[in-house]
Image 1 (spheres, one colour):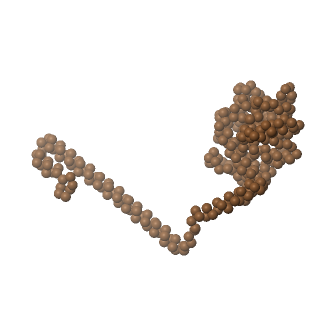
Image 2 (image 1 turned 30 degrees about the vertical axis):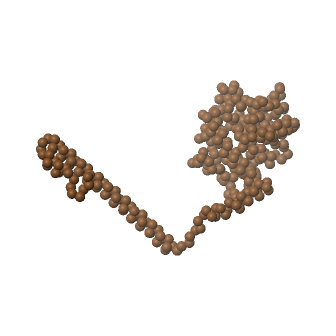
Image 3 (image 1 turned 135 degrees about the vertical axis):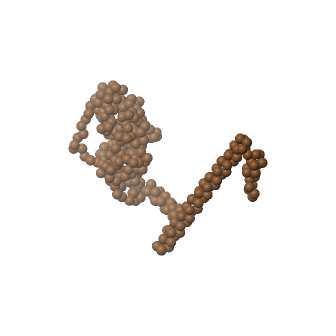
Length: 321
């Protein structure tokens, strides 16, 4: 018996489906926090199996007792360190032997020291086996044949990235160290989903699959029928919103562009002229103000009489008060 832990429900959904397709002679079950109605049934079934795989979230990390679990595999380290111990505790119960394995990226190896200090747990490194088969091309083939898998893979990828950002050990699991291209390859994706976290990142080590994604159908005939109906109802709406392209001669196009250009130039000249007029008016007003100040100073010093001041300070004919 093997328990494989993922930190997101979307990861459980996606990889359990892929394992079911890859390991057709093995019982592969899945369980996570959103499967409230099915959880007890799946749990009871896995308990009764002599061998099989349970793909699960941390809903199975504590408070459950499953006998004779041989391996606990953690695809990603849990958000909280104490859950690491709870996950491992699903194996080697009641004096039985068992094994626990966690996958870490090279940039995450300081997590080993953290567990040693924080949880008093020491781990041993296991080197990768060169003879392991590469199943990633098969994952892509499965996704090309079923739109449900294409969508599940994208959701699993996005949810993992969001989980990674919110990890409690943010100094160890840093989003800037995450290789999005390799991660997408590891998920067997056909293309990388559009998301803010990926924008501007180097994903040159990921080669997307060239395909007409709109034609990838659901294997479930009912879901595909609903999708096609949705496409048919949306197409007329979109065609109404689109303006039909106008066909006109090149000479007319050039003439229209020239007219637009001339209008822009006239507007720019008018704008500059208004700005110059406003600036000139401001300068004139400033000069008048300075002249008035000089007159008041002369009056105060007795250099001119009150009558002379009034005659020079009073507004000229035609000017409003």
